[in-house]
Structure formats: structure tokens, C-alpha cells
Image (cartoon, rainbow, N blue to C red; front, side, top):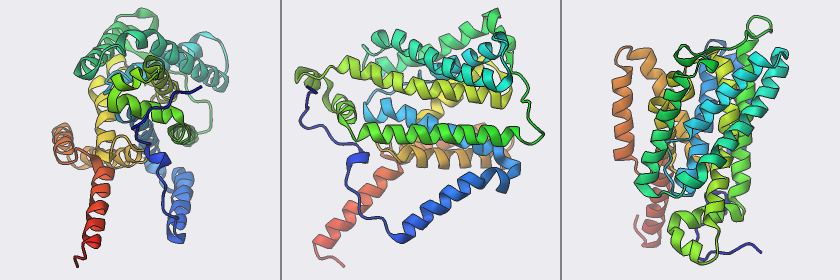
Length: 340
């Protein structure tokens, strides 16, 4: 029998929503059509759009731990890097064709990432608060240094991935749709889980872990399961990203704690952590702003990005979704008091 924890807040996926208007349905349909046609409508920026879906996946998977469960992890990048390297080794050593090697490598990447989460989980998830955050930050740095010193995977020189065998111009759309499918699968899986006891258990751990454990919730099991869930999608994302870029650098791509590892956190906070759609919104806005910085603020883009991160943390502590919730609550209070 599953334990029930009183006082646990239901995640956004279970909050009853108002009926969708025809205009909203049309907007959603138009958005889906644009997403499906994007490689042919925006041929010059297909790679950037592929990275947009990667950013969405980053923010969603980080929010499982940081938003829903209250464990701010800087170590999720480890699973991404493990997936990238495992897939690359499978493609290099298994003697399969490109697409067969990619399929097998992506599956192995997910398994290897889960194995890493299972190995690290019992030790790391025994830490709480800033101790956990600092410990996971050290994981990413340690893995980057270890990969940079391991000759089997190219050490500091990195690994070159096999060339895409398709016709010219087909490589970018292929990885765009692959990353789109993976991001949508992540979103739908999390939406389904948040609406079930698993989501309530994560929220109970976030609200008061000691009380949840005293009431019979096996918190350690749920924490490890949540980390493994993140690892599955991040491992597959690493496999696809390595092939998209064509080269795996241990510090700049695979275990990029200073970029990807931090951006995961910032995107979820910007959109509103602890919600389903907040990380998606935050990832889209952050990625768009970042691309504008790289286009119009060349040589100053990192300074501008650092300032943006500080502004997000200071001005949007509850995120855009949190701000919208507070704004609607304020409007309802004004309406109830009879104010004009």
C-alpha cells in the first residue's frame, strides 16, 4: 500500500485548469505545426533550434530534483556527459552502421547514466541543502578532469564522432526531430508522473522530508528514483548532442558544469521551478536571449549572460509562472473587495 502524506502540495499537473478556449487550442495547434516545420521554415538556424529543445530537456530534468523535490543539483551534467561518451565509444568500437550504432549507443547511454545515478545516489542523496549542491558541483568538475586524463576516450583531445551518412542538408533536420521527440517525451513522462503518487512524494520531501519519512514514506528510494529518471533522458540527450556537434570535449561539452550545468538551474528559476511549464518557458526565453547576445554582443556575450543570470536570480525569485500566479491572486483579491 502506498503511503499517503498529508500536507503535500500537488504539482501543477494536477491543479484543475480552466477550460481551454478555442483561441488557445488554435495557438497550440499553430505552435505544433511551426515546431514540426521549423527545419524547413528556418533552415539557417536549425542547429540553434535543436539546442533549444536540448535546453528545454535540461530545465525539465533539473526541475525534477530542484523544483519538485527541493534538492538543488549541479551534478546532472554528469549523466549528460556519460551518455555522450558511452554512445561515442559504442559507435567507434561496435562496428555497426551509423544509424544502428547511434540507436544502440543511445540505449546504452541511457543505461550507463542510470547506472551512474544508482552508484552515486545513496552517497550523494544522503546530503541535504547546500552540502548536496556543493557535492554535486564537485561531481561535474571531477568527471571533467577524469575524462580529460583518460586516453581510452581521447583524454583532453576529445573524441570525434562518425560522419553523418545522409545527403547534404539532412543531418540538421534529423537531429532536430530526434531532440524534439526526446524533449516532448520528457515533458509527457513528467506530466504523467507528477499527476500520480510519485509527484506527491517528491513534493512531500520538498516540504518536510523528516515528517514525510516519519509518516512512512521511503524518501531515499524516491530520491534515487527521481535522479535515475533525470539520468535516463540526460543520457540520451548526451548521445544525440555528441553526434549533432560531431566532437566531444570533456570540459566544453560533456561535463560543461560552468555552462550547461549552471544554465539548467537558471532556466528553471526563470520560468518558475516546481511547475511543469515553467522550465519550458524559462528555457525558451533564456536560449533566445543567449542567441541574441552571441549575435549582437560579440566579445561581450559572456559578460551580458552573467549579468542576465544575476538579474534572473534577483528579480525573478519565484519565476515567471510564480509572478503570474501572484498577479492573478492579486487581481482576484481586488475583485473580491469591490475595488475598481
